[in-house]
Image (cartoon, rainbow, N blue to C red):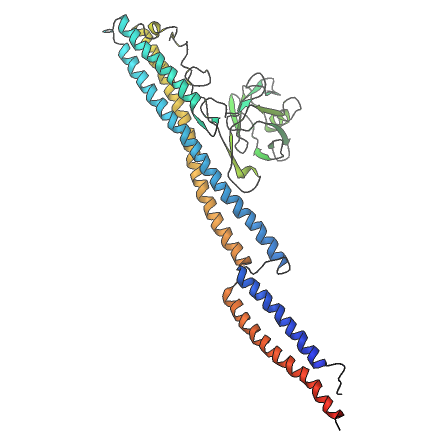
Length: 398
């Protein structure tokens, strides 16, 4: 049937041309942006996966910067400790010199004067060493146990002996930690206020035996000692009693480094920067005691005996400093591995996200050429269809 009111062929051609034009617009958008997915309508599931991966990539990239900042922090502290080590070696050298009775009292007083100055310099270095305003060598970035003593946790042994627990919290954050115990599996759980939990399998403690519970995720280590011994169930039940089930860590806590993109216990690590002040009991403890009299320059190494006691005190200080430098060195090595691991993760996640979201230029170029041909053909066909209705008018001519 011929009609001059409705040109079905033209409508069909127009619809197809509009469809081709829309497809061409999407192809051009993808080519110009470089992304296959520009909005949820392009691929809702793919967009969701891509955004999660982007969050991981950006989070891990920042975690790399955080870890590198942590390495810089450790290097700052370790550099200061190196100088403290040099001072201690000089102090020991002076102690050995003073132990020789060829020195009279005036010479030993002169040596004592230098020792006082060197001890003062150790304190100055410790107090002055900071990273971004945080003191590193005064013990303010070390966790401390809340309560009067470090043996707040005392477990009553069913065999009538007592299991006294020493608690080390140097690597922990300031928080409240709670014990729970599952007798069916001998599982002891320590959970912080954020709900992050670490499980350990509890064993029996033999008579005069020791068991160390190392909750490494929280930076807390509990040592159980028993004279008579006890079963895992008795120990676990006692630890989980309301009177014993909480460890409160106060103070600023250790330096917490966010070395992951998420909020699990595995995405952060704690580093303690211990006190290395010479005159602090929690530091090198180069104070009166152990046969050394720091009352004045004349009394420190006043005799052979005093000088030998001084050498022993310095040796203890050197050992303490060795341990604290070793702890920081181990943490630095761990952070360097963390940076390497995060770098690989960022690379792989970026590649995965690219495969999901990025445009295939070759494929889109082919589609663009195809749509261009269809657009040209559609335009020509629509023009022909519009002319078809004109031919009907020839029937009306006489």
